[in-house]
Length: 297
Image (cartoon, rainbow, N blue to C red; front, side, top):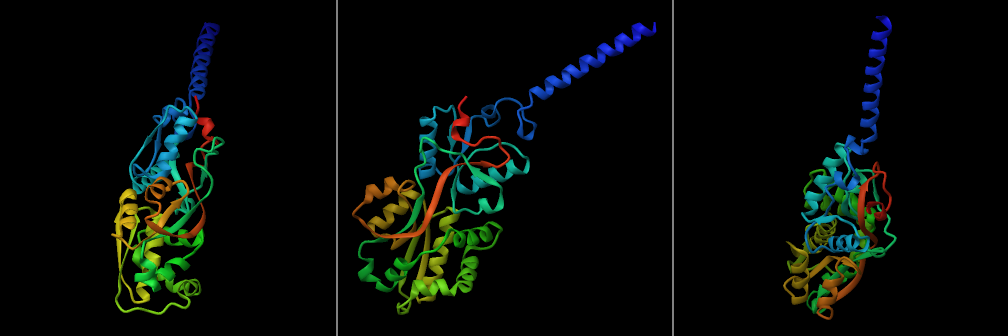
């Protein structure tokens, strides 16, 4: 009787152990999810607004690498919200990313390697003025031409805005705290008295930061500054047609390359105001993938 009961208990224990092993084997990794990484992500890359250069490059990467993924467009705010939610739950996520951006200071992230070069090389952010601005507003033109800062400067503004501060207030504080750098932009420029100037920008965290900062500097020099938020295409159309005076938000040569080519000759390129920007696919550091090639199934 004892032997029969012992054998029965042993068989049950073995069966339970086998089931536990099977469960462990089916565990997909992050967040205790099951299935392949593609299945966990619903074969989706979380993007920003349709037409953005980083979205087009992501779509090109899907084609170049033969991925079964879709780039889901939304907005910069929706993308960072989805990223934050995924990280809070240690879930996998792939987003279109660029830096400078506050998310690299807030989270432990990494770019996926891009051996096929779908996202191109490092980019610069240029200042673009309407034709004739140098004659109509030579002082503003000179300040815009002098405007240059580092990625760390931009990120310092972005992180404060992301924490809930008003962009204009953060820009005011940054300008007050960095008078040595501002003095280089305004060197030799005489103040004006209420001359109206309009700066257009796309609602990316990086461009909210840069446009508010240079807008504050122009305001301190006596300009009546209007900041106009638009989408990518209308931003370029506005500066090319003279509806806006300038933008400090032109990511080149890749992100805004098609807009640059479309309106080439209809604007004045003042050169880079920030160098060494980057775009690509970004994931939380805890994800055990390192290259876009790792997404191929």
